[in-house]
Image 1 (cartoon, rainbow, N blue to C red):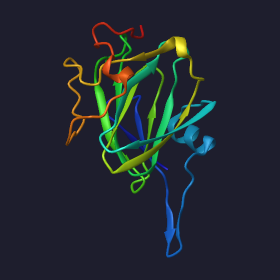
Image 2 (image 1 turned 90 degrees about the vertical axis):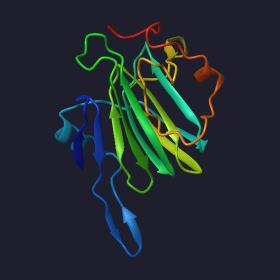
Image 3 (image 1 turned 30 degrees about the vertical axis):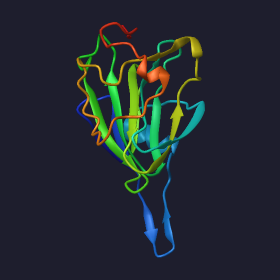
Length: 181
């Protein structure tokens, strides 16, 4: 596995080692020992989530203020532009974001630790996204920052107006959201 450090040091882009021949391919999508050895991060995933979305669906920016979740995100069908925003007030990268294309083709994964808001937009006709979390979902702690907040100025690579849930349409601005210390 190849670990790529992003502009926000806590966010890691992970490229698995892929074994491919005329039959197809094989790779380890997750190996706890290799992840710990390569990143120095020792964690325990407790929940796996999967979503299916059609083109131009934008989900986010989501996070939990109670029981914050670290996420290991990957796409198994299609392609997404995946975004993480640092919402830790004490961080030197507070308010900054990074975004990467994750696709079934490139097999990249994004490690997003607790303390970040997360979202993605579907670039392909459909996309299936899988992500492991380090804590359980907590409805009372569920929060959403407005996807198009002008202070964050995220370039979502949109080619059409996004398709949003009611929750995402009603997200709070970055200035008024509940953030981490």
